[in-house]
Length: 486
Image (cartoon, rainbow, N blue to C red; front, top):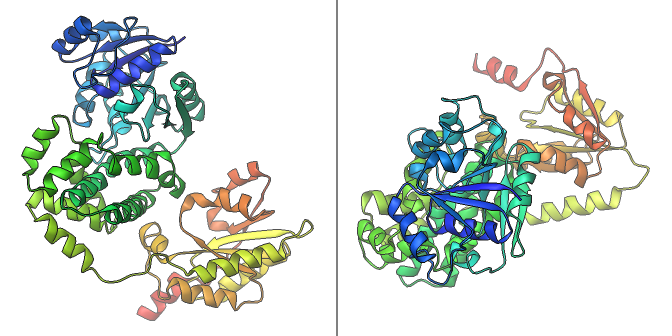
């Protein structure tokens, strides 16, 4: 049994309190609004959860100090706009060994901080606190369903896997399955931005559009969210998990979703203010718009759906005009490489794989292919029987490496494939994919230039030999470009 305090008596806070109490944990609830505590104490119900009886074993308090002292886990269940002020109050009574679980979803517009970053900053003004003791709990979980015991899943995210697992164990119940993730920033980005896409889905519904439009918004919406997340340094896999596509689907399709409902009202012609008033609760997608816009500019990532919602909400653009603008955008491909190329690469890899073959992998941009590149690839191939080159995609080069290539991905790929040292070329789309690539392609040896010395030693934990080869000192793509400019 764990001692847990829920800071905030909204629908999600009360739902979690009930769930945790039913699993025999010692649960206390505090609210900044004394009237909320009085109502719950008198009625054992929440006014917006009419079908749920609040368990009598839950302790209620108006004293924040009482809610923090000697509690093992503190759950911050307040709207995102109150996370900073609430964290500052909580920090006065906090101890270093306590765990903070945040369930709010948002990004602060002024600082561009996620909720966990805000909490960490405020607590550290008072006492030294480990960032790893802050967990983001996020996923496709509407309070209206969890409160009546319907099956649900959620993600416990922390840089420290052991802390994430503690929260995983505590929050697991007969109807709640909890997964862990060490990408807390990615999980929080998903939680904040999916609300904006849900506003878009609601607007589409309010305009009278059908399931096709919703499906398109969900699919292209997760593409926008993941592009920004990857540009911010997050692994792509987070966005296609429960905190990403899972939460996005439920928020875009359920009438329990405040953001979806608010969007419906806007699509039907209500003003933004009137739409928020009709929902009657905090609409986090509205609060996230400013931060999303600034982040898209900062990281140079195009977010057309999010920008369309921004223009509707902030500048009063007619929703139908926003839709016309989206459909009038320049035609583009969905993938940076063709399906035929992917099929060819998968078949090539399958046909040449054997238990005796030693497989080597290296990574790079390989723009303006020169003899320095060739030397590296020749030496890499000599270390094994089969050489795979993970070639940076155009998007990865622009957004993550902050470079401009002379040749595009397809052209650079064709040049590498023409070399006798290279057996297979695969796309490099994120910094974090290396561990997964080594598993998927059964890599024996990982090779990089010695300018990356020590950066990838962690792959040795996967049984991969890591080798850093000396670069050819007198030649580089940068030098070629500089010389040509001169």
